[in-house]
Amino acid sequence: MKRFHLFLLSVLSLIFTSCGGGFLDFVPLSVDQDLGLQSQAEINSSPQTFKVLDPSLYPKPYKEMYLIRDKILSSGKVAHKDDFAWELKIIEDDSVLNAFCLPGGYIYVYTGLIKYLDTEDALAGVLGHEMAHADLRHSTDQLVKNAGLSFVIQLIFGVDNSTLVNLGANLLSLSFSRSDENDADMQSVEYLYNTDLDARGASRFFQKLQTDQKDPGVIEFISTHPNPEHRVQKIINKWKELGGKTGETYKPEYQKLKKKLP
Ligand SMILES: [Zn+2]
Image (cartoon, rainbow, N blue to C red; front, side, top):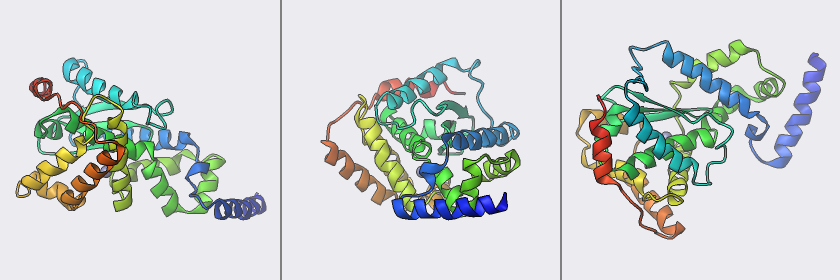
């Protein structure tokens, strides 16, 4: 068995080196789904930290959040639209200005972020950014890079579940590289450009952060997401590159959505 693995290792090394791409293309999508589910289990086991709003008690905000998600999914630009779950949960915590998306498409949005923003395109821009991290498989890529080639081989030929449990739990503390952040910003513009929403949505969030730099919640956010001003400019440049079409912001509708939250 060991000799077989050694043989595979050399063959795969050759393939990876010659095609120039990363290992990611060789890692089955089921790995993303499993990692996401493991992290989701972690979240569900900490209801004090992650107070997920019950969709049956708050059907209206969930319905509207799902409509925004659907606009992104229908953009024709989400590579893994049909492969991942794209399930959405709202976490009740007004002090957190954030959202995240686990591998396999498990989206979490904090009430703090929804209440902080003013328009639907801004929320869609942030959702698009988070969904892009899952769609571009950034966490899986990072885990694979950190864990090395033998891990990739295990993933291809079936990894034992305890390894994924550990990795899934670690995922929640993982942060993305600057280049992953930039890619997710650009992808968000691509997604929104094919909807009725204004594709500069995510830039409105960063612009607002820049204005409120002294707010404690903002200080914490900026510590992990530096240089909001550069990101605004890059998003606008990308939007111009795509043709500079002005989309809808749905400000009055968004204000109504905010009022439906606890
Ligand atoms: Zn990000």
